[in-house]
Image (cartoon, rainbow, N blue to C red; front, top):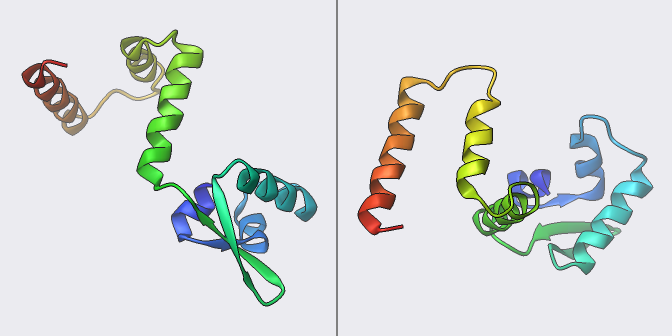
Length: 113
């Protein structure tokens, strides 16, 4: 999905070539078929090839994935998920990252969230 999102579209061969340790090409095609059946991708024919496109904007898919991650691994606690992200980093937050997080917290407080 990352390759399809990054490029806006991709063939099975392009996806296979873009994977760091790719499985056999047939496995990539099978995964694409499954993702299409689940509604994450659609395809168009381009001669003998299928060109795959995402069906959901990346931002919406990201939110859905984060909700699933928080529900599955953190019992629904956003604070526990954020704490895990911050605690597990192998480098301290930069000043700009701390400022960005402080801004998010200020905004959320102002919105009453």
